Amino acid sequence: MALHLLCKDPESPNNGSPTLYYDDETDSYLLQSWKVDDPSRLGSVIVPDHETVVEFPARLLALFPTRDTMPHRSAK
Image (cartoon, rainbow, N blue to C red; front, side):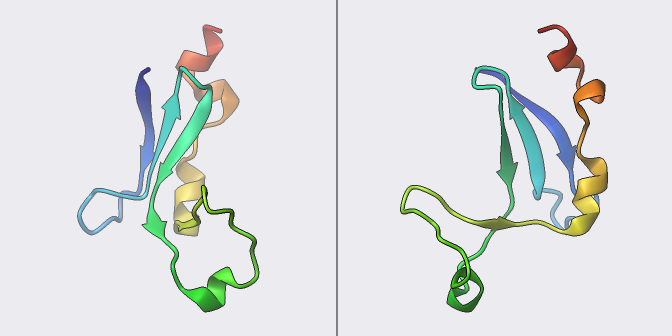
């Protein structure tokens, strides 16, 4: 398995997250971000025990790659 760093929030105060990765073994994405644990916010979503909810700033969406700009995807 290889995780590929796709984008990172340039405004992160410690340059750690939010960060988006691509897993080339599972053909899926991992989003490292801030865990949402506020019961009032989580009250409107159903979250199974094996899942969690994370939050990231809207500015990060502009940095998400598209299918056409992901070089490792074009080789498949």
